[in-house]
Length: 54
Image (cartoon, rainbow, N blue to C red; front, top):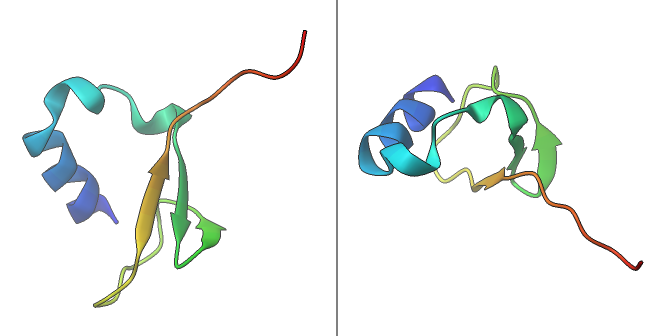
C-alpha cells in the first residue's frame, strides 16, 4: 500500500498532504495501510466527510 500512496502523492501532491485522516477500502472491504496489495486489487481512498440533517 505504501507504494500506491507514494505514487498518488507524486501525481496529486495537493490532495495528499495528510493521509492520516483517510479511510482505505480494498476490494470493497475496509482495510488498513499495512495491507500488501495484489494485482487487480481495487483500492478506494476515502476522505473524511461530514454532513447530515440539521
